[in-house]
Image 1 (cartoon, rainbow, N blue to C red):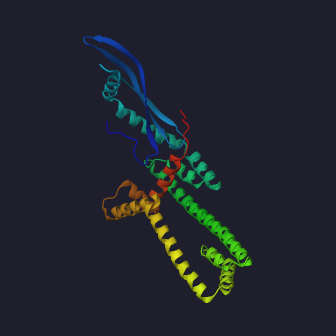
Image 2: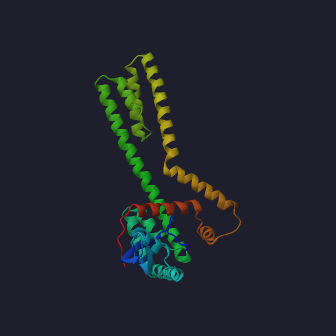
Image 3: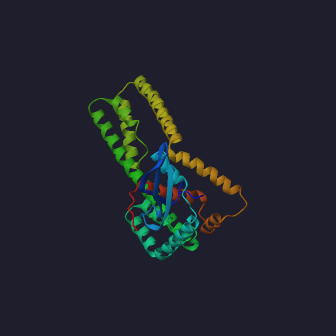
Length: 302
């Protein structure tokens, strides 16, 4: 009937098939199975499982095999009222988000304050684009939270690097104390630029460890380190090449180029222009929201 719930949509069609009866009628050489039942469709959102509208579509089918009778019944369902069903559901969704405007923004702010940035973004991205003014406000707020999320990620990475470096420096210092400068130097290969104090300690440990080995051994270790670092960089490049993030980034780049090459202005692009938020950032927000929803348990609320 031209409707589906595939793609990065925040709303989905939930089907439920109920077979009410299976009767057997004599049909000469073979018995005939007569199946009666109903297909129930519900329009839900993935954020909280809210059901906006549901409808039933009765079906009946017959065949000489039970499974064939069920298949025949389902295939021949009459979807005559499905267009009105979707139209009514859309109106209810829009009305719901108009009424819940303050609740949605308050929930997003609370989530962001608690560090649940993905949930906050998902909450805001649920607001349909048809509610243009409200959708613009939601995108602006989501962009603010997106920037906070980036900052939090960077701070976590800095803290993790600091902790990793401290561990490396402590281990290298211990190995030097045990008169094992070769392994100390190898341990220091994993050190990454850190704080000024860490960098000074790193340089001092390298100098001390190299002073405890011969010049030829030090040069051999430097060569081995170069090979080690080259191999690490190669692994990182290969990993990035095959991660979903990189694949998604390439897709976003292609779409951005398509948007730039198109002259006709769609409603979404007009919104992006008013927001001064580029299409790639909006797509990133949508991706964060959808990933959060896919990994979240849904509780149905009628």
